[in-house]
Length: 460
Image (cartoon, helix red, strand yellow):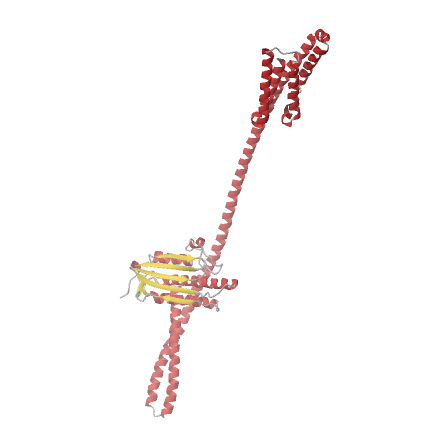
């Protein structure tokens, strides 16, 4: 009976301590078989007539069970507890040996041997009890430590998250501040450049005024000189000179008259340029005037082209016009609309010039020819104006910002970022129209101006 209790509780102790059902399933099956074997042995002991050597089956079984625990590393944590069984096993084996070998001695000291055996039996359970209690304490301590580690880890992760989040916020704030500083610097440069351009406009207006007077004298006297040449030719006809002399003098007069006509022609051309400069530099009156849109667009197209040619002598571009001759004169703000044309044409020529430079630098120029096109059309009580170029185009990220004030893709000093925003305001607010852009990066750009009939009126 003692062996049964010791072996049965030993097996249960091993299974519960190591949780063999989940950690060691193969060993758990063997331990269950060992438990069944102990039950079978105790049942045989009580039911059947067992011989004297039946106790040796228990000895062999217990020795085998203890040996398995000692030989396998899986049971290493329980070896110190299993040692408590050894005194009980040794005393039990000695009792059986003495009972067979020296029965007289065994009968004489049977009482003492039984007491020693009982003490060893009780000792097993006392040690198991304290071991189980210690194990529970260690398990609780381990669980507390794991819980503290888990809480510490969670707190650490929370702190790390807060630190990372704060670091991210500071980084974003730093980037926003840097961006704001860069924008302020760019705005400052653009304002300086804008002020320079305004001063240049005033200077241009002053120069144009000064040129206007001598240019008027040149034009007036050239026209008078042409008339004088005609009168002189008439007087030569009345003179008594020989025909050969008359023909010679007439040839000289004809050449002189032709020169005067050229002077008059180019003088008037210079006069129109000066008037255009004055018109562009002065503030708009805010009153609409009948204007030939086709002539206005053509004039500013060539003005922008020659302006870029003055900076870059090697630049050339094809100027294409597709004007609707039925438009006639339209009531618009000529100075403001002229600024719009100048801005659009300047950007278009800049785009084709930059594309040509990039293609030349990369060696892929091929048959590329810069081209800027202006087209006008009156349809369905609306005036449509298209300015198209085959230049660099724009990506979507630039397209959405193109009409924002102070936004420019040009280097500092080459653009203020105000041209297109001002043009947008002139078309939308000044003429109740629309200004949008259609572009393909690296291929083309087309600015579309649409002015409704409310702002357009054919002159009588």
